[in-house]
Length: 117
Image (cartoon, rainbow, N blue to C red; front, side):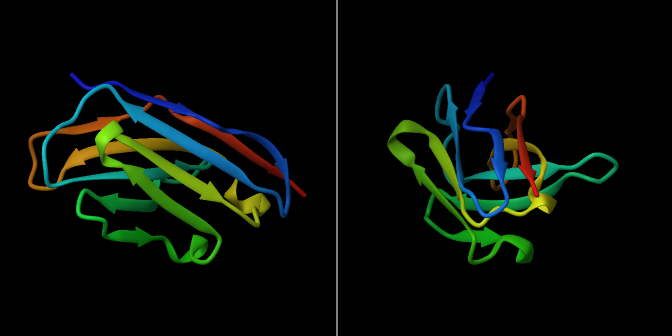
């Protein structure tokens, strides 16, 4: 089993910044993807950003230009730098670590991000 430990959530005013971190307890082999999803009350969980072990990134349209995802392959860690935060970014953010061709899909416990207006 793989454990994912998230940190960095909190309360911030609109326009502010937060940095989320997620560390996996071990590698799951390549190719893989590490990413962040979020779920607001009453809404479905949605992809925020993801990065593959090869370095390819994918962002939700709503966060492009404001959020940046990065990872450290050697440490099995992924980061999400969130700038220019908006109240609509308020959600529980979940870290995900999965093998691209199947055989492993792991989730963190979630970290709350609240953006006040």
